[in-house]
Image (cartoon, rainbow, N blue to C red; front, side):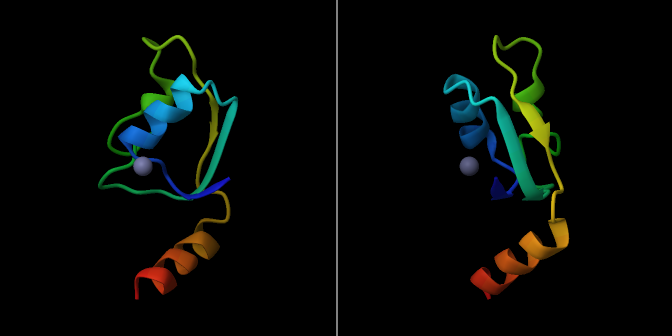
Length: 70
Ligand SMILES: [Zn+2]
């Protein structure tokens, strides 16, 4: 479980490491690579695709991120 939707670099690492399931809280419309800006994790051209569950505890994780960056 991660707080924020992974970026392209993190999503690529998750695919190459063959992580089976990715669970994250808040969506990141500007840089997200799990369905927002790109969808690297479910790209059918890649030979491994993790299961993806996004937006889990979204309000709580967004609050954690806001508090950290304040
Ligand atoms: Zn990243």
